[in-house]
Every structure is written in C-alpha cells, then in structure tokens.
Length: 216
Image: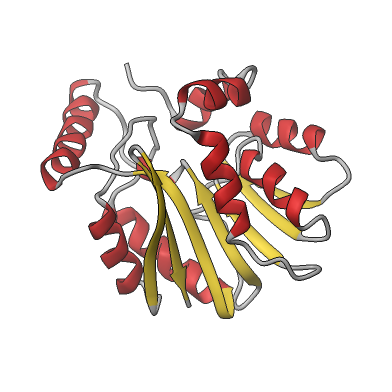
C-alpha cells in the first residue's frame, strides 16, 4: 500500500541518516559534492527544497558556517531532527509543501534539493521550477542531486505504475504518496530550461544519482 508522503518520512525519521548513509550509493560523496557547488560567500542565502534531516546542510555548513538557509519539508519530525542536529546555525525551517510555500522574488543566492524531487511529475515540477527561478537572485543557481531514470522506457514505467496503484487503492487526487517516479537526466534538463534557467549542466553521477546545476 502506498503511504502518504509526510507519514512515510515521519515513520522513518529515527535512523533515517544511518539508512541513507548505508543504502544510498556513495551518498557521502554526493552530499559533499553538492555542498561544494553552493555559494561560499558570507551570509549566502540558500533555499533547500525537501531538506529532511539536513544531510547536505551538514556538509554545506562545514564549508560555509555563516550561510543563511531556509529549509522546506513536509515532515515536522524531520525538521525537528535538523534543528537538533545544527542548533547553532542560521536555519529557518518551513513545514509544508514546496509546491505551495511562497519563495519570494530574487531572495536567494542559490537553491538545492537532494533526493526529493524524483517523486513528482513533469507537470508538477514545471510551475515549481518557474517559481524557483523567480526566487533566485541574478546569477543564482539551483543544484539538484537526485535519483534519475536510466531510460525513457524506465521513466514511463514508473509513471504508469504510480497511476495504476493510485487507481487500484482508490487514492484521492491532490495528496502526495511516496513512490519513485524519476525522470531521465535529459528530460529534467529540458524541464529546467523550459522554466527559464539559462544553462543546465550535469556535473557528477553516482550510479542512478546525478547532480545537475541550473543557472539563472
């Protein structure tokens, strides 16, 4: 049975960091690499979409202790774990859906998301990426490290399976359920360009996890 997204992560907050470090391919490497692509200037304002317990933020604050981070996550328990882990850092947490939370305009030097956006479709992500583009300052960037499909056929299969399961379980529209529906890297790049980003590059990969950097 599919679980609501917020319920899924609330139930797994205990031991979440250990699980990610043990089972996600080369995660220590990609968290550190992702952090290295974020701005190192003092008081850099960074938006984290789906920040969870802040594994990427631990690495980022090691590099830039004076950064100012706004972290958005659906799960209050995850945000509480983040605040407990980094109590002395400048972190503003927002419990809610990054699809609904306003970001403002030209408010952030950079944005980041790690292992979160592969749960959503092209149709859901395009308005989010457009909103994100507006929220970045001129010259800002979005660093996306995520799980991607290897082929178009694989991408289509994941999407069909989610539709089938939602129908089979008679799940309400407009509610997020935990199921992976990754896009291919090429499709994600095209989507980010469609949202207004001027240049999108793949900068690293670890198995099915890839890092993209999109420039405003």
